[in-house]
Length: 280
Length: 263
Figure 1 (cartoon, rainbow over the protein chains, first blue to last red):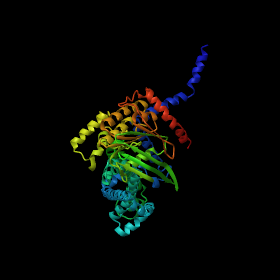
Figure 2: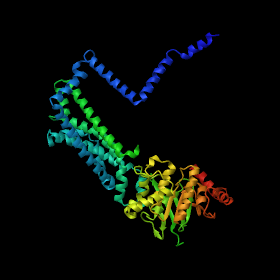
Figure 3: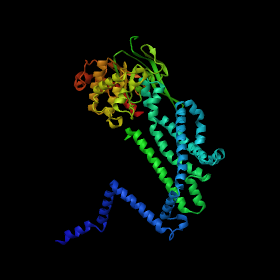
Figure 4: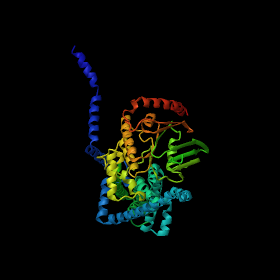
């Protein structure tokens, strides 16, 4: 009599199943909390770095993959001899100036074309052709035209960002809810009033999404310019490290670029959230 | 006839799609008197909204003439307020700013103090007190409709065009809005063109109900609603006269609705 309920209990407890489910439950609950998530992320990075540190040599040649400690030492070295700031300043200057020039120009052109359909129809094929062109292909042209200094990098960044913002602005003007402008027209608004009250604020989401994407492209273009020709910048650091088979230097440069790009993107995202607060 | 505020003189409208002309509206004639409330009823796609768009001047008739106060509506008609079926509130502006937006325009320019006072009155009128600083995205469908209504009324247009303004609302809220509309229209002595596919709504509110046939739209019947005003929109449905009118008009409408769904 007593064995039967015991047996049943045994079967319901099921081998290992319940135990693993409590672990899974605990994990799910922990990961649902922000602090839990943060700890998990740190753990992932820690495990990854440990594998890299210990695996470099025994598994993969150290010459190729370096080690996290060597990369860290390389960054510290660049900070100490002051070269990091010089090169960082060069890259950030090129990326930021090109970004500002390119996005302002792109938004302005986008508005011009979007607000005058005739102009847009005429220029349409040219804009598409230039947009489809891989801008990197222009880098050599900028070098012979503007030299190997910061100017050629600014130009490359500006051209890249310009078309991104041009297209996003145009898309915004095309896809904007037509009813908004019609409602204003019926109320008696003239064209400048519609532009100021409806179109400009209305396309802000498109402009910000363009600005966000453009950050990444700006850094890519700046570094590409430096890789192709130049004597300063993070791209130059990477290139010259590669020339010396110094993989620590390459990874250190890449790491610094990631930091820059993430910081700048965060900055834009924060601004976007503040300006478009009505969306939250 | 010459005293009519709005005259549709044999107007027709067709659209081009894939090199094929689609007739949305066959020649239609109708005149609307000043301070008259006319409801247009019919199956979807019968051209009711097209008529409103033409009265507003957003569309031009393919054929015929549309007169407003005896003049052809060639361009935008600035004498009308238009509450479209679609929500056209600006999502980045608060309730207060959306309602006040017409008064910021050069043609309705109003001093700041007066503007604020009128916004306050409008918010009270449509019962949105306490929601002044909310954005449209934070409001329910019914509240957004009220904001749209207040935005249309604030600059006091003489004619109101309403395209299924309460189509998305639940039955109870609809009645509350009917009550408000009736009060506001009565107070402001407005002319109203009201598109709906809810026959009960049409009879409860309108002086005349115009029944349209399915596409291409034609006028099938015009019926004066002789229910006395002011009407109690909450109870009018239970009066014998309402039932009679409803049955009579439903007979006209039901075949069209069936045709409309077949198409």
